[in-house]
Amino acid sequence: MSTQTAPLAFSVTEATRLPVAERDAILQSPGFGDHFTDHMVSIDWSITEGWHNAEVIPYGPLQLDPASSVLHYGQEIFEGLKAYRHADGSVWTFRPEENGKRLNESAKRIALPELPVETFVEALRQLLAVDADWVPSGEDSSLYLRPFMIANENFLGVRSAHKARFLIIASPAGPYFTGGVKPVSIWLSTEYSRAGHGGTGEAKCGGNYASSLLPQNEAAANGCQQVLFLDAKTEDTIDELGGMNLFLVADAGKTLITPALNGNILHGITRASLIQLAKNRGMAVEERAVTVSEWREGAASGRITEAFACGTAAVITPIGALKSPDFTIEMGTEPGEVTLSLRAELTGMQTGVVADENGWMLQLTEAK
Ligand code: PLP
Ligand code: COI
Image 1 (cartoon, helix red, strand yellow):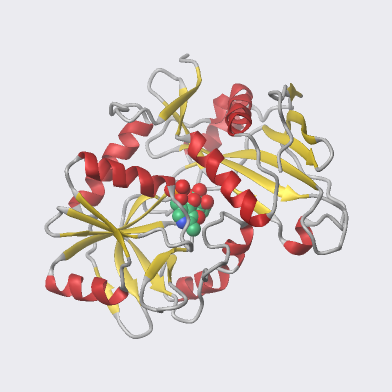
Image 2 (cartoon, protein in one colour; image 1 turned 135 degrees about the vertical axis):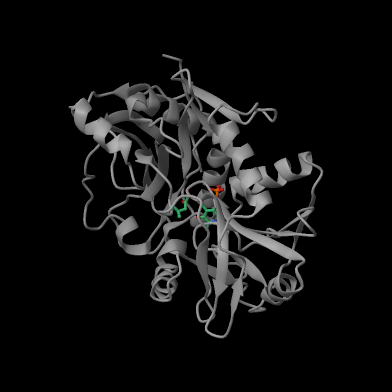
């Protein structure tokens, strides 16, 4: 649906910036998703003009007509990636083209326009050109980048909108889970599904997350930090967590097992990268149907020794326990060896202390 042919030129409107002392105080202890940088990217789309009006503007509230289609039928998609500060002061990001491609896969499913991947990457560059001082340098911190697209036509008929808007906001981030790399507990959702055959499970659309919030509240009420969703048909095969993919480590650390992409699971970029890193190490990687029964039996027999969640926000987070109304699988109170070593390799690459042999890093700003 994109009609853009020539590269878009961005206009830049300087914001009144947050005073340096206040910004530095935020960067010392950023939390996750609580604070936002001085600027944002905005690009408009219409069915007649294609993509136009590419701007970097001061961060601030959007003015939406109450009839804007996103407010009624939830036609919205988003992405998540991070910018990392390297020791020489330069800022880098990780596989941004993959996020651009996935945005377009989501756009197709939700009937939104596709954005050229070059424009997606250029938009990130433009934002970092003005807001690079917001990239923290502390351990386990980064600038979380949130590109998203909303349908924005003032019309109540139920059809795909003829106007849309793409935006990128940025938020300095520490670990997603408080407590750093400590194992988290996850709750097995037995009552609610995240996705079904032919649904939107593979798309990164807001609606998937809206439907995960009730089970997420159930998880919290049971002392868990995330929800694990099962395949709606079998009710035993594992899909993924509310906001992360899942891996199991088996055979004395020699095998990595993860649910195969079955049409319901988000194609995680961290997931794909870890599969590659594990293969590079000579590990066997099994992408296939994985059941809770297999996990239960494997943990009991000692074949499955580690479990972890992965994603941009979560990085690699060890799973200490899977809890359900009927049973608990205990995986231990300390992170596993393979979990920690894959995490060190991935984050080392992202922060520039491990060689980027796969060519995954893209430099966004110069050293300083
Ligand atoms: N699965 C879901 C539902 C997610 O929201 C995310 C996070 O983006 C992931 C998996 C992991 O994807 P990625 O590694 O690309 O961040
Ligand atoms: C991400 O990791 O980018 C996500 O969108 C997941 C969410 C839990 C913040």
